[in-house]
Length: 164
Image (tube, rainbow, N blue to C red; front, side, top):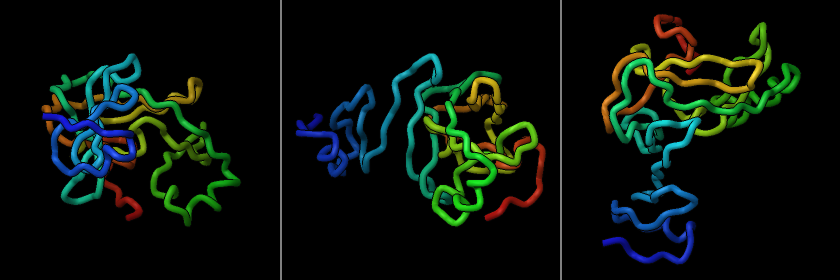
């Protein structure tokens, strides 16, 4: 049985694991986890949750067939000259290389900057420079409850070391 909560902030403090409230179309779960409603840019229900190895990650709430669009995220473009200032900050771990020569950066909105790295990813991403978006696509079937991961090197086959 869901409890009544006075506000979004108050709902985040309820550690029951049950759906306790809805906020702007998102169901609130234990420890502030949220499940998104579907939209044209996010056709499958996803949630952000805790992972064993990497803090938080993005999880499928339903089966996602191989080849499907998982999410299309708008980006905030970061000019090359500003990347030097961004690198020593927390956001330095969350941006994508961007631009025709990949000398710029882009911070993905939506869940785009929360997908964790794997050398055996379940998803890939495509930079769409003209529309200033990044598309995340299922490389294989992804089961409900499974964490969705990408290879931070861009290519799913690239085994080059990453920066962390």
